[in-house]
Length: 453
Image (tube, rainbow, N blue to C red; front, side, top):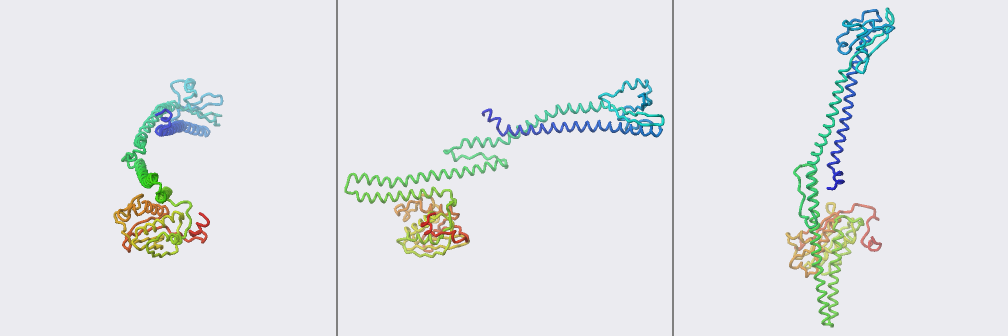
């Protein structure tokens, strides 16, 4: 892995962010701890010294003996001194007995380890100054020990958190790295492979399952595309081969040109229809309503396509209904249904259009051989044909019913096959009914043809 990519990896970034955050938090907490500890301990000594000064000053002002240090003061105050106006020590509490007062004062002069509290007071014997001297050396030494411990412990704890975060993130990202490597190896020729799902029950497993489902859809789409290209190539090869054979024969027998031209024209029509159907399927593969959809009187559209039934007896019942859709696609849907029924009916075709359960239902029945139940889904596949009467010789390309279902699904509906009361096949198409709207919102097929979409 390149050095720049390694530094920008999620593992490095997460570790750096967590380490910096923890280090900063520990530094701030250490500073706050030392400050609080210092203020608390030294402040307590100061408060005790001030209280002792106030007590002694009050006693002197009243002309009383200040007495000795009490137990609390004795713990914090090293010595109390009472000085006269010239600065001479008049009294010490506790009394200094082992050496002279001057010698005692030399050893306890205020320094960085002493806290001195003082107050001037007027007494019956004259002005006096009370000083409380407290030694804070042990306290500062204790605080220095805490500081040294924090200076050692904080970096060590930060390093420990960094290592722990690194290994935790590495363990969390290990399944993702395995997924990335497998995904990198999957190509168009190996779409059957899947990502290894980690049995963790967390977001990584759900992400893997989602990606595998996406690969399933891509694999199915690629397989359908390959089949589509293969079938289309096969379907186009047949009329092209026939056209080439007719041309080669006509070159030998020049007098057959009129008959050859007629056969070439038929083959050309077949190729033209096939390419038109392929284009229709390609455009409707997204199975979504086109932005060109508009309100359409579906009953008038169906009525306009009834001419597609030319050889069978036609029985029609159309209720006035409106749908939202693209007129050319809906026309192709209806025309394919009617053409299919007319080609395979023995003598009769019925067309029914109604509204049921909030859907527009178009039913086309014929009295032909019908469709076996086991093949009712397959007939909607591209280029699929039934045997017997629904064979290649009947003139179909195998795309008509595929277009019917694709257009129906693209308009939010579906198409199914059932058994018709006439004994043949019933093709049933359901489309969402258009909700009531202003009259200008829905246009008839004739208006669309006249004014354009």
